[in-house]
Image (cartoon, rainbow, N blue to C red; front, side, top):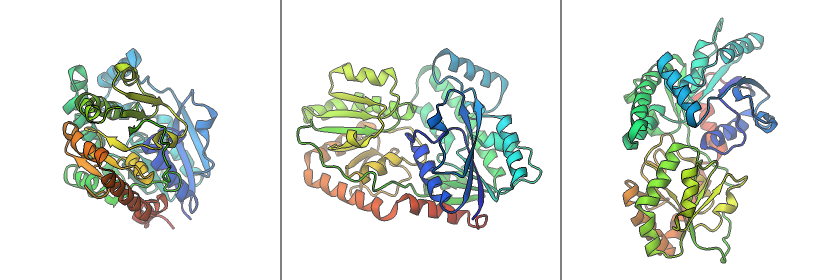
Length: 405
């Protein structure tokens, strides 16, 4: 059994984002065999449920902090401050914490750790500032190549957001090239990310990649209600810009033609915290539903004819695709949407190069029940056989085997 310090920039509850789901399920598996101390920033206004840790750690240490606003003039002020006072990218600058740095050093002096795991790039600044007398081995767990997300965002953005996105991409690329070198190892979530880190960033300490996992029992297929109007679904956090961008582009460029070919079909957008622009789609008269935040997404997915993943911005891997496959729902995605996942086109999923040509495979699926059934069956078989969270965590442990005992 090893003593592990896990660094994070927030709670794992509610587990309503891909990153939280991955971290939570892997920590639950690790907690069976190792002693986990979870050290994280936590916004001061967080409720008691956000502080829960009993099922994934032996103890948790929370550093209260004032989270910058996510929208409006408050966010603009924070962004301007970061640009004028620091060379750090904003997504690193807003999570920097001297208190967190000092606390991790204090905890290590109190009871030394065998390994520190920095979950995402965001806590890395605090880790690199920690005044360790003798630092233990440390691994950076990279769920994404962060700079690539901002580069793709810059390529499709307009107006001031385009300039800001390019600026953040350049800062993130510089930081992401430098900071990971100072860890003993880096773990990615796909072979594609490993290649980028080694070839584009020049990292020589990449240990490998961890496959995406899914709770195959939780997402067991559910029989649809024949009285429900036929619908396709999008599943994903709606407070993430890449998801909003993809949904809007799909509605503008693909959905009208799909609905013309399939009258009465509904497009259901499932995910937490939709902004006003997403809610406004409900009033468009185009057969669009928005669920908003729900405690359990499974009833919203039940009976879906297909799940659509119209992404043109992103990085890492999309856990939501595996969740839909586990639920027995055939998936149609852009290549970027399924990037990094071990899925085969025309076997486990249907792929399109980009959003404008997503309509053709989606229409094929909706028009051919045999094709939809075959894709759904083979997709679920793939995740059931190879991609449980236990299997993913076993790979994670093996990559760090030299430090775990």
